[in-house]
Length: 184
Image (tube, rainbow, N blue to C red; front, side, top):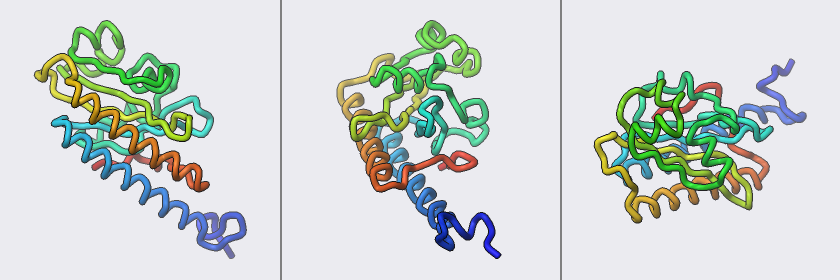
């Protein structure tokens, strides 16, 4: 007798194999993410993946933040007034350099995150479509604007992540979030 995990599409072990591929892909995204966060001198960041319907972003992997962080940010509608959703909708970098700008642009987020921070969000694009979003957080004590080299490094990291996601999707194995976000 086969259980749900042991057979998929008539192939024994296929679901387990797909889950293993998904975990490996999430770990690879995590390696790219931690490199980007470290290289930018940031304290944390994460990768959101666009759900199959294209209506929501799901937190897949994050680093430098406590596991409890994921709770209210686990799933975000693409039409929500938050930075990662705006980056996906507008297909451009979103930068918030201080608490005043956050309160002006994203008042609900400012209420939930009442401490000083700066963040950047970028869409993860590949093969002409958006696959998700990258966010990176810095302490609010950093300068209020991004330097040109920081923008370049952010765009390079988003480009690599977008290509990885596009490649796995084209191979018929799109990366999907796990039941819980991978915390590094």
